[in-house]
Length: 220
Ligand SMILES: C[S@@+](CC[C@H](N)C(=O)[O-])C[C@H]1O[C@@H](n2cnc3c(N)ncnc32)[C@H](O)[C@@H]1O
Image: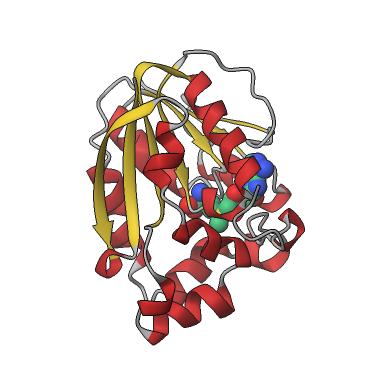
C-alpha cells in the first residue's frame, strides 16, 4: 500500500509528452540555468562504467544519457533503452542512429520484462519517483531479474530527506512543480526498498546540496 492512500498513478507526471517531451533536453538546461549538462556528465562519470558493459536504461528519454554512457562502454559495450513516449522515442532514435550498439525497445518498465541475468547495469534516471509504491516494487523486481549476479542497479533521483525541513526553494519544487508522487518517494527509505529485493553493498554520490543522489546497489 502507498504511505499516502490518496496517491494515484494517474497523478504522475513521469510520462512526459507533447511540447515538454519535444524540447525536454532544452527545458532541462533552461530550468537548471545551464547547470544540467555538467551535472549529468558528472553523474555518468561517477557511475564508474567500464568498457564492454551492457546497460539497460529504464525510461531512457531523449537518448542524452545513452550517448554519454556510450562514451564509457565503447564499441564493445551495449545500451538498450526502454521508453514508451512517442516524442522521446523519436529523439532517442535520431540522436543514437550513428551507433549500432545503442538500441531502443518500446516496453513499459512497470510491467514484466523479458530480460534474465543479461545486463551489467540497469540505469534509471528521474523515473522511479514517478510511480506508486506497488509499481516501484515491480520496476525494482524487473531490474533485479535483468541483472547478472553482482550487477549494479544505478538510480539517479531525489535523495531521501525531510521535505518540511528543506529550504523554501526545495519545498516549492517538490510541492508545486513535481508530481505528488515525488514527495512520497523522498519520504521513503530507498535502500530499504532495494534490500527487500535482494540488493545490497550500496554506494552513493550526492548532488545539488545533497537533494539529488546517484544510489548504486549490487544484486547480491
Ligand atoms: C523525467 S523523464 C527522464 C528521462 C531520462 N531518464 C532522463 O533522465 O533524461 C521520464 C521518462 O520515463 C519515461 N516513462 C514513463 N513511464 C514509463 C514506463 N512505464 N515505461 C517506460 N518508460 C516510461 C517517459 O516517457 C520519460 O521519457
